[in-house]
Image (cartoon, rainbow over all chains, first blue to last red; front, side, top):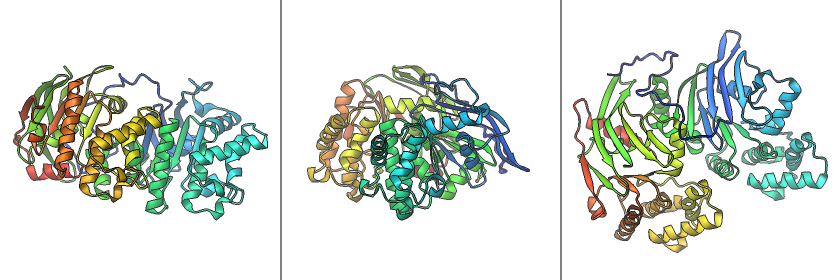
Length: 280
Length: 242
């Protein structure tokens, strides 16, 4: 007989059957973090967080505000230094190295080339008064491209793939709707064909109908380009639409992880059960 | 042998209610390539729960379900999540009666999508998508339209066309024919017969078992175990969104 307690202790849930390590999936994870810890004063933002992301996979991270999910994303984007742990990406020449120990310039080079990010707030990712095409081209410039025509063609291609209306490619983001601003961020994020795409509440704040269209673009992009994605959201609908697997965070800890449909339909941890039923 | 189920038990632990609900206990059965197993039993005995447990939407409580994949033998109740993702992409199928349409995605695209995820080229995927829609009898003028605006019966045709566009090694069917017209039901039978002849194994919960006349090989009958609660179990199953 399973026993359970009503209090949400921070211990991981006790699933009925322990899962085995992967046996059929022969690819190595593209991303692997182990035992990340991070505190802000007395607040533990991350506590022993471990997870992995496989090639072509979309991993969802859900949790309420204060769960540590945004901190996790900033650590993965190498914007924030945790107190301990390991971070590996399966990308040459970084394989086997703990990325948390990279020098500052190396960290920046890695970020520009291999990690794309879309923020909830477009002001964090875009220069609102520059042209949209210029925003996208900026990454290519940092990576060393200087030829005007090459930059423009690449920016255009990236905006097209992001299903941005090309007739508006020279408008500044401040003149665009929220949905279009997210498409510019997306175009910028994928301009250098990164190995990893991080999405921080990518559709929060958009109208429901616009949200559905942006999610559709993300799905199509993931399917066609095969980028591994990690999407952070408090919105279970977004997670259900996009992700294959999901981890649930609370008070800086991963309390449950599993297939997205399983976590939403048969949550094991008391906290996840409450989270899922609150949204029904 | 495709599947060997041993002592499979599913019990839900509902923390908020402080109780457990038993769905089924100690199930044993096997399934070979090309076989169709009917899951029979009354309401609230956990028929849908069994399918979802095999698909790993639900976690089993104990027992095992050994599945012989192209890539090797694996226990579906213990396989790593990424292994299940892989099997769902390549070998395991699940058909319900519900379509999840998405805004501004046409019927043709929606049906083609599983092929596109499997790496089939756009042109080929759309050609096979139109064949599949044709088979299930969706009117041609609706192919480019958005299924979110369709009637229930038309949505079901799109749903079946999508769910059955790829051959699967093991297909789980959860009452796929609920509000289908006779033509579409005949088409479904025809498609399942063809896939069965190619060796696809099936486990089905069917509202109208006569839809599968001549295809069914065996049945298992579920009965409510002690500690079950038919109404609560039905409510749990109803929460499900495919």
